Image (cartoon, rainbow over all chains, first blue to last red; front, side, top):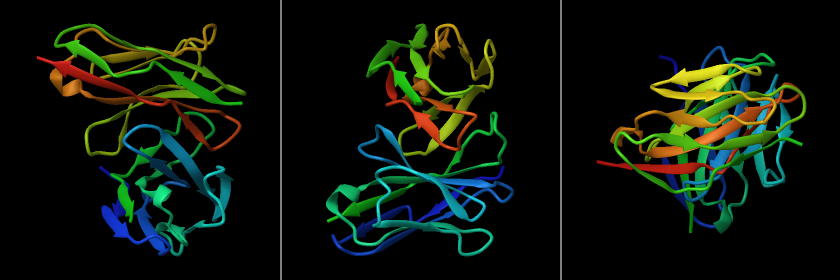
Length: 115
Length: 112
């Protein structure tokens, strides 16, 4: 069964360092997303990406964040200068498309710990 | 705007008890509604969905009916098992945008 894969599963970094989280969405999907989850609870939307550009982003997704689809398979989230409050589980998700239905498929997540 | 309000947890039930987790929504347009489940240490998995009013989504003994008149999508299961212990998220997607909106999650623990 096709799945969304994410790397690394866990990253520890120092405050102020740059971090890149990588995702391989399901191959025929068209829409890509990043969400984050703090303390195993609320799932917060960061950004959605379609047709090689950001389609929506939240207030969390400020200038420190960027996304890229550098080739036909990877979808990356970069945090330019990490802060302590960026510590969270980051989930990549993708969906096939269509205005109705088109559920999200999530990866297993990348846990980011900022010290 | 779009939002999902979900029953506060945590919920603790005995095995074979009846489960209801309430979910109500506000949305522009005609949303699709979803329940996702997150088992400990894992990502979110789709449990069930409904794309229009009066649709009933069902999977693994769980059911939820899309009620437009009450803007609700309550999750139910007649007899829970220990293996159902997880966090459950209600979510919607409006047909006018790409974003999915999630509730705050309800933690369920089923004890033998």
